[in-house]
Length: 165
Image (tube, rainbow, N blue to C red; front, side):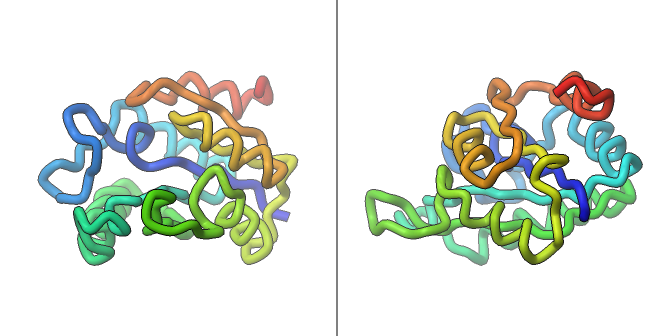
């Protein structure tokens, strides 16, 4: 079985300072510590996934195409660093518009990845900046780590790799 790291996007991978929604490439800024942390995880044999709520789609603020453009931009940056994201799961729904089964804190996408990629939940982690990220992880049977928004995650990365978390 594989081990995996699941990451929230806005506030963890990229800065959300000054923006409630990040849906334009020009507003997308990678947080300090992400590139070295993802490299360390990859070198240690972890598969990498992104699980993100993008409720602005349901609210009509931006489109799924906007989300895909931001994701392609992110993936192109990571490819230059030889970092592979296995899959990006995003929920385009919002509770204020209509309920769904995939919006965090639902464990839907994490459970889907566990099944599709033969992931060992006991050796896997979710890093997020919201209580719903941790709730989603724990409901899927993996360890959830809540960080502060836009915090450098390198210390958490090192703790995971040392077996301290």
